[in-house]
Length: 115
Length: 348
Image (cartoon, rainbow over the protein chains, first blue to last red):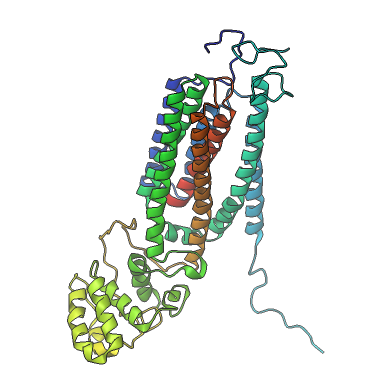
């Protein structure tokens, strides 16, 4: 900064209020996720609520702490695509496990003619 | 196109030593390094994805196993560790700002605080792992619930179906009979573990000591737990040869009492049958937190190296790439913990 306009600034300098704001938002979201998980019973929806809160926290960290909001979009795309592949990976694994039918044929196995 | 690289207005031939000559500007070099780092971070996300996949598939198929297993994890420690990591992320991000502004002392202090937070995280993990190891809540064949965990598990199991030698019967393998008896006695009363254990030893080593053991037994039962009459009818000397409840006659293990908490995190008792293969939950728990813990340790090494470089005056507002990339790695470790914490500790 002290070099005047002929020296270009490397990277974006994040203001302190923003760093602290993000930090306090993360702490509040942590408290929120503990509270919703232990005090509120939404049945099967609890896991999705927890994942949404974790997703918001992760987005805050990635955008502001990891500077993605000021970076060229390429870096953000790399992260977004890695997450997309994780979701594909989990989703297809879940589809497979949902198709598992151990009792497709009920009862004992059919007799097989032997010589 | 050639911009000045440093404040002394050095020309093209005389660039700073950190500037690679195939880059035009410090910003271009910085952006290229950062892109490489992000590609590496993507592979890290995919590395953890394998474990998240194991988690998802097992959870989808065996939700009861997860609900049962997670009661042995301490939400308090998990939440504290989350806050420790979030705070370390704040100081890490701040250290990059300090590097950009040329505040060397502040940068080193912030990197050092980040390093200390990593140490605190690992110390808390050590406390948690110690409890798990002590209670035998481990993966695979190492899953041998003992102490408080055994009380929750076996206390209920003896009631559930008198299941003999099931998954939880494994606790008995590799233990001497004296230890098994001591284990039963220990289960009789909270905090009375030591005295009955000594009694159990005496039983096995010397039959003549049976009287001493008989004296120890009522003390163990004095914690408000009543043994059934048919169990009390068994001669104490005979009890030394009796197998524990998991594989022996039921009734030796008392009913788990409501409303006591010894600070191990499981304040409530399990109702209903114990799910099978709980050791898989602990395998997943140790796999995920273990790999994450290794990343924290690597991050701490990187932070230490950054502090060393900073002390050598290697960084300036024009060149702080290692600080930025090391801190990116630290943030990713935080990012993964943000998902691990609710998924492992907060299962409804």
